[in-house]
Image (cartoon, rainbow, N blue to C red; front, side, top):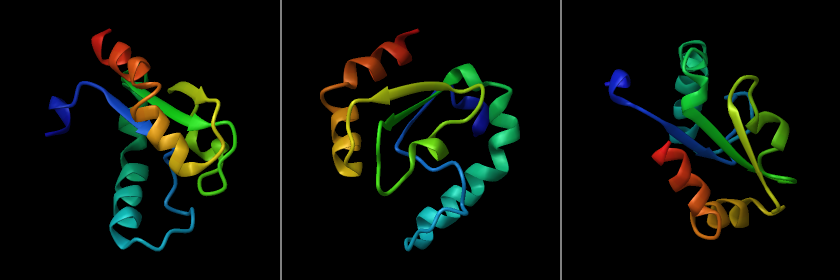
Length: 99
């Protein structure tokens, strides 16, 4: 139930299904995300987006949405961005959930 979701963390996430993907599950999830963005914007402070300074898979520009919290990471390889967000920078995620 969406009303039960208190906070959301995204990592190197394109907020548009228009981004080229091969994975049909990811395409469907991104389309659903895109449809729900208007409702999510009402609770934008409860969403944080981690993204790399450079990313050849997901451009940083499409990982940032107006009104959402942004958390740039000093990484430039897609897999390293995700891994470092979940390990080295996991304290930032933990602090966000504890707010």
